[in-house]
Image 1 (spheres, rainbow, N blue to C red):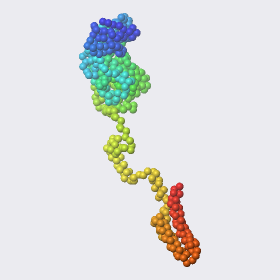
Image 2 (image 1 turned 180 degrees about the vertical axis):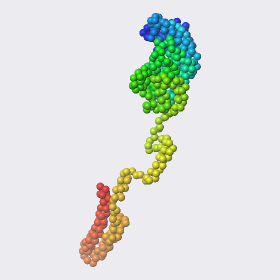
Image 3 (image 1 turned 90 degrees about the vertical axis):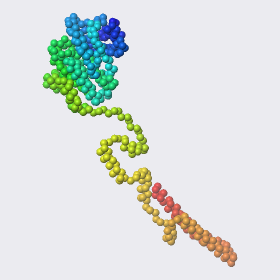
Image 4 (image 1 turned 60 degrees about the vertical axis):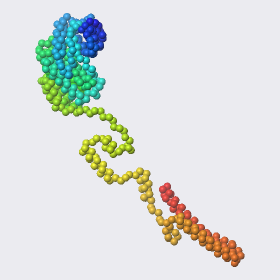
Amino acid sequence: MSLSHDPETDELSSGCTLLYGQYKIERHLIDGGFGMTYLARDSLDRMVVLKECFPSTICRRINGEVRPRKPSYQEQYQSVIRNFLREALRLARFEHTNIVKVHQVFQENNTAYIAMDYVDGMDLLSMLDLDPGRLTDTLLHKMLSDTLNALGYVHDFGMLHRDISPDNLLLDKDNNLTLIDFGAAREDARRQTRALSAVLSVKDGYSPHEFYYTDGSQDPSSDIYSVGATFYHLITGKAPPDCQKRLAAISSGQPDPCKMLVKGAWSFDRVFLAAIDKALSVSQKERFQCVEHWLDLLASCKVEVTPDPVAPAPVVKRENVTEAQAVATVELAPDLAQVISSLVQDTNSNLEQGQPAITRQHAEEVEDTPPEAPLVDMFGTPIKDLKAWQREQDKACKQDRAGKQDKACKRNVAKKGGTKEATAHGHDAEEPSSGLSRVFRTFSKRRRRAPSMAQT
């Protein structure tokens, strides 16, 4: 045997061996009212959990051995060890998927030890702090059912667990729940004389008021209270008020400081919440008297299945969205989808194809412009093609001018100085002709400039 310990905490140090080297302490895990828990490795190199009987209120460690703090505690201390061993031997016979498996029970260092399975998981108290999102409504419903089934199995052996709380429920990676820490478990709960009465392990918020009294009547409803308090904590995020304070308030005519879950805005089924409220009744008679009654009620609760995480929808550019993609974007109830489809069809049937805003504005401006008056010549004849009409007028002027020049040449033969006269007559004839052409050209240019000036 190789033992060493921390004199300040009384914990066994890493590397200590027990039972002739069969178990080697790896590290200290946690302290409880009745003992210390260690992670150890057995002779087959398997990880196990060792529970050491160590009621710290009446004992201490001296040179590796556990001794009563006072001589007057000797008888009480020995009674604790006897009960610890007796209950450990009974626990070793437990075969339940939700109860930790006991491998071995032995005595050493003037105390007793239990070697049990190492559950690679996280206790619910730690999970509530580190990974609260994992505790979905569906999982909480399953865990409550598993806890009650395990507790009913224990009660069938005539035992009470007496220490149910979030830190004594482990959840592994596959969401399998395991009830641990039976250090406070007791046999023959109705017996009035109990060796453990003076060192009862109570937890404020989780223990019913009868656990605080040495002569309190304890039965399965006492464990049921602790289960209710545990799941109250998992739902609200905090433990319910101390049962002693609740009892004092009710006895003095004050309201119960524990708020009922069924009156809160929780997402659970009302029956599910009301059952937890009933389990948390201060009066033992008002609680469930056995776990079977709670399980029957739990089976009637509606459980909302938590959906699996949905992958984000792909981002599609608006201009590239097809009708099929638009329909697939949102899944609607058939009736609602039909109504929306009808509304879209009715709306679209009264629509005309749209135009850009600039085009519409330009069209409105063009429609507001008064129509131009038709172009006519000096005799009122319509001119359909202005350029063609101008070419005809120029050709006629040239022919007229050529004829007059020919006549002038003939007169020059008869008269001297006919050249000047012919030239003068030709000039006079050209002016009207060319002047008329210039008038029409000017008129045409003004009409072409008119629309642009109006737009300006």
